[in-house]
Image 1: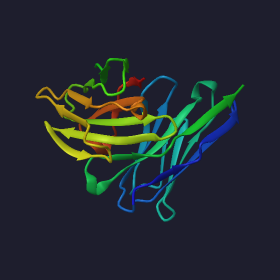
Image 2: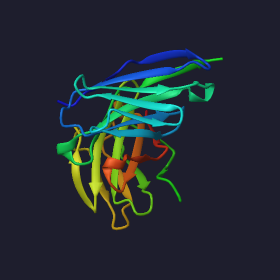
Image 3: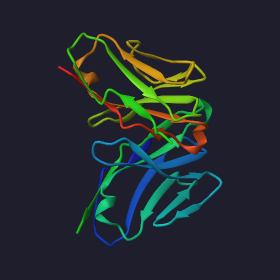
Length: 112
Length: 112
């Protein structure tokens, strides 16, 4: 089946690390993504990971993939108030070409 | 490089009317995707066009339709508008889906 689950809210203090979690169900998923949506805006692609990788690091962002548990996480180091947004994980459904399935989004609130 | 552009930014229609939303993809991108982001429902996949053809369709009634033009721009039409069609409609484009989508800022459709 196609389902992506995320917790809805996360609150952290400025300077702390944030960890946003996601679980997916489609075993044929080969590509997974993290998007960021700021108020009133579209979605911005932050990073992606292929299923043959366990980890990907890009500046303050670290993505961890546990294929056995179908669990994806996004860690933001040194979280800033500008990181406050909604974060969506998404999986590419392999047998449906280019269709992306999105989670409900996690609203990250960063307090000064 | 111009991003994905959507027009209009906001659209207010009366129940029963028709709405037409437009999207211009990034130059060189042949695939266009439409998503509905309704309050509390996350992003729901609507349609995928590639090279002028409809490639995949989400679980939406037939009154949601669209097309892709030879220049790869796209139109989403919603007929017989209902109040629950009020949402942010996001368009995205890609050259290859595995590299992720680039989203526009969306059209906010309000049905009164």
